[in-house]
Image (cartoon, rainbow, N blue to C red; front, top):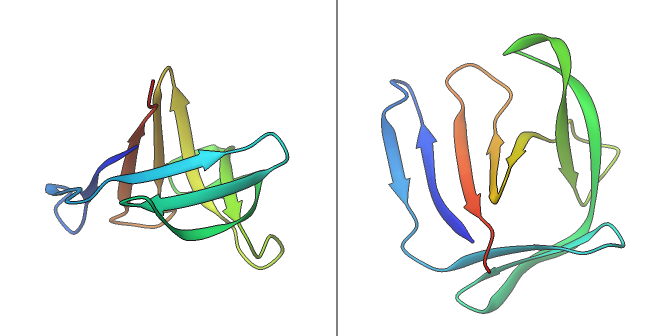
Length: 100
């Protein structure tokens, strides 16, 4: 379940979700994104490792839908928390928490 985004020029902008956003990942490498119970996006996802601005090591990233045309979004999964991050200066991070 999507909770908030944080980032921007100062890194202090926090945008709390005003709606219920759910991101569902399935075993067959497909996903569904819903907002307030309505499907707003769906398709395939892939996990890749890319160069990134935060480290000299490659980092995991997730690509959605057009798997060959984008570098994806960096992500970190820790316990029940999934954070996506843009891979550029002054990025936004997007926090999701597993629904139990």
